[in-house]
Each structure stands twice: as C-alpha cells, then as structure tokens.
Picture (cartoon, helix red, strand yellow):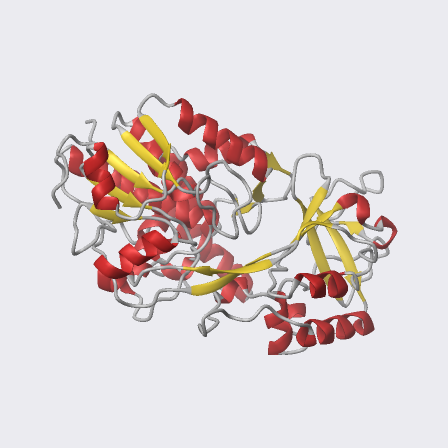
Length: 458
C-alpha cells in the first residue's frame, strides 16, 4: 500500500471503536485523522450528529468484575478507554450495569475528540480509504465503520477485501415517554433485590407485570402482527442473543417468558410473582423516558403501537422512538484478517468494531483499543503481540479469528480457557460462580504479567 510513512493514522468511523482507537493513539502522542460520514450520509439507525452514538440500547452491560463484561471493562480501563471514562461520567441508575444518558454520552465524547490537539476530525463519506490515507498523509488505516457500513465503504470492502456476503439483521428496542404510562399498574424493582417501603422508586427498573391470560394474548398478537420484510431477498440472519421479541413469539409460546420477560426475582410488593414481566430501564438521567429491555422488534410502526399498548400501563403510551430493524455487516475475520486484525491483503489496513464479527458496545470499543495498541507497537518498531487467551480481549479476538462459521459473539466466559476446581461438594450454581471468580482473577494476573512483558515504556 503506497501511503506516506510519517506515522499518522487514518480512522474511518467515529463510533465506539473508532472513538476509543483515536483517543488511545492521540494520548500516546500519535497524530490521528478521524473521518465520520453521519453528518453527510447518516444510516437509518442514526439519530444524533455526534460521535459514539448508542443506537440499540443505552446499557454497556455489567460492571461486576467477576462477570465477563466486567472483566472486559477492567482491561479496557487499563488501556485508558474513553468510552468507559465518559460512560462513568454520564451513567444513569441501572443496578450493576453501566447504562448511560446516550445523548450526553455522545456529546461529551464528541467534545473530547474535537478538543484533542492530535486528533483532526472531519466529515467525510469515504469511498476509498487508501486514497484518503494518501490525501491526509497517513501510514496506517483503521476501518471502524460500525454495524451499518456505508454503501460506499461496503462496495470498496467487497471489491478489495472480500467477495463474500457479510450481513445479519439486528433490531432496536422502542423508547417510551414516562409521562404517558399508567404507573398504578407498574412497580419499581430490581431482580432479586428487596426495596424498603419508604423507597418504592429506589430501584433502577420499572416493571409491567402480566398474568397468563394477558401474556398468551400478547404473544399471539406479536406472532401474527405485520412485520417489516427483508429487503432485496436477503435471508434474515439474527444475532441469537439479540432476537426481536416478535421472533421469540414465533419460536414458541414460552420463549419470551424464559428470556427478556422472565418473572424470576421480580415479585410484586405483596410477594407474588407475575406470570411474565416487561422491564423498563431509564433512558436518561431525568427518568423522562424508558427503554423497553429486550424488546428489539421488526414490527411495522403501526403494529408496534397497537400491540405494545396491550401491555398493562401502556394503554395510552407514546414513544420517543419506535423499534426498527437494520442490516449489520461483518467480515469473515478468520479468512480475511491476521491476529492483530490487520487485512491479510493490505497489512497496513486494520478493522475494528462490529465489522470484525464481535457483538456489543464494549466488545466493539475494546477491539478499537486492541487495534490501536497493535498499531502503536508497529509505529514504535515493536513486534505484533497476540493477547493471552486467558484475558477477555484476547479470548474475544481469538474467537473471531478461529470460529469455523462466522457468527458474532458477545464476551462470555465460554470464550476463555476453562478453569479447574478441586473436588468440592455443593450446588452446581455455586461451582459455576466460583469458576467465574477464578477465571476473572486469573485474567487479572495474566494481564498484569502481559503488560509488564510488552511495555513500551520500560
């Protein structure tokens, strides 16, 4: 690739991965040119003009260190993640999860990137990243165009990187106006947590309970309601951990009740467990709107209004935005990329974010940090290094680089090497919890040794 050799990095896309990569490199003294197309040619899922927009939900998942997401966050913090830094500054109540005021979150990341002296941010709908790298005098390129790559970039990728189709469909959950809800039919409660009588709104989640009759009727209507069809005769290939609620309804009467509508741990104030529950999470700091947890959908807008108003307390609900489906593009990383997520055909070209085959906000941002870390090593004339499989980030990258059939994945302990326990008696759940704790402690120790070994500043 004939581009300049002045150790400047071009990043295409100012989403979570691109923003974290840009900030990491700039903080290491490396000049960055960050190009973003949303002000010129926004995709159907984008509503904001600012960077790092959270389009599906406002939750960045668990912060508990002994969970897989907590483990990954610890590693991201060690790399100086801007996403997590701003996430903490803009968080809203969500129990053990890190949920944010998405408008304020995006605004503050935009301000941070725009004010950094080593980041040159421009509005540009990129159709050829190599030509743009030449134009701006960049030696390395990171393509971090997110789950909805622009048509121009997708055409370029298919022409120069991959001839294969690379897509699956994802769906966005609706956000409901709090003032339009009937709170007499709802109650605040976090799963498995008790509330004091004088603190009925102290929980992070609002719950809409259903009895069996209400649930059965609701599921029947979800299954029969009109859906938005796939476009251009494409097969609907969903990410299994983020199924539309209407697809769950089609898979079986109890599918949703054992997934996002499970009532376990959500007993009402009389101690009675509902048959099913819809959970609502605050969308912003004011609590003026709520995200319908797990209610991604491909119903038409008209049908969403009809069916969702069947939920107790939603009879007169108005929505800040309704759910929608969109196409997500991702690469066959095992075939096309090297272990540092550089392109095998064009080794100065890297990919980061959901386009690599990871799924989730923190997972996407972490791959931006991973690629930036690898590029920093190359700029400082150090060898490329694979991260240990015992770490969350190392396991995540290893997954996309080895999975036989491309299938996007969140971070989970199943991606890490197993830990062994001494023979012990007890419940299976207790053993599982202990294994996770041991895996998290192992990851922390391995990462510490790895950083000591690979440090560029000894």
